[in-house]
Amino acid sequence: MIGRRENLVEQQGIRRRSFLKAIGLSSVGLGFMGMGSWSFLAKQKRVGSDEIFDGSGVDWKTDEQGNKYFVPKNIRTDLVNERRIVMARFDGVWGKYPVREFDDDFHDWWLSEKLWYFDQLIAFVEGKTSELNIPNGGHHHPMISTYGKKFGGRGDSDFHLNTTAKGFTILPKPENIKRVSDELDKVYKIGNIPLDLFKLEQQLYREKWLWDRTRFATLELYTGRPINDRDPVKELGFTETHTFQNIIANPMATLTYMSLFNTDGTQSYFEGLPYLTPHFEFRGFCWLISYYNPDNTEYEKAVADYVNQAHSRFHGGVSDLTVNIFLIVEEFNNTPGYRAGLGKRVVPPAEYRESELAATTWPSGSKPKKKA
Image 1 (cartoon, rainbow, N blue to C red):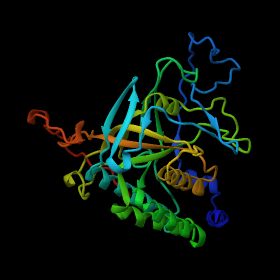
Image 2: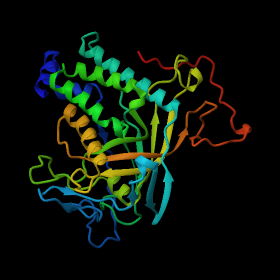
Image 3: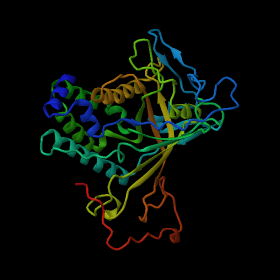
Image 4: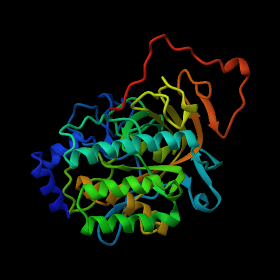
């Protein structure tokens, strides 16, 4: 059905690539770090030479069909779905952590921006508006921060900290992945793309019970490419992103969302208060799924297919990318000027002294930014 989608876009006078760029559906923004050097690494030349940097020592394997894969060694997820426990090793020490759900305020905020986003797309495709003004950021492009080993890495930076924006989504619960996937498949086969796709996704996200509140998911677009001899992706000069290398070494990470818009007093979350800028922070662990790993569980295979197809069917490109599942251990509400925010932990709840909870007063005449 790719051809049908392209024809629809062409009929509106917009080339497919321009259309995708216009609606802000970029899946990942990768900021390359400054050109530094590891002067103490004898095996790597200084940046600026013709050296092509290899990986950071990840044990890449090859399956019987010639496809590359890796096996994470610093995280265990076999108890995540049944007992909501993740075991991870960071800074050289193993620990056991409970996996928790994001709270209602976050879910209501995330959903409000998601539905608004689809409203804009649907109005554009239906010809009700001739312009799209959908900024990047918000519910789809949080920032993920990771840190790796003090010594090692790609050899193009003196730092082992990394922050980047990626296109994250929520996942169906394990028992619901097949249902959601089947409904999407049906639309792609017989539906009017992209209009019916947008409407179906909007409907599915409204069914809150379908979705897993303990995790988010994204793709590692540039790690492991080319994955095999048939891969059309050209060599980047490196085989692993900084995010990937850091997670392999230390799976702990922080994910932070900031809203595109201030609250206007009509929302269901944040007590309906206006003039607030929702800002959420999650701390947890990254569960990397290598697409061709022969030991992937049925759940890992289902998630790898679900996230890959969500990306490749719309954007095009390969469908065998590494998936990164972010497992939530803690949630903080960093919203400024909000009594229940101000950087306090909300999952699991933490008690703070009353004197620390004074809300910030807003300047007179301050108004929330409208969504229209």
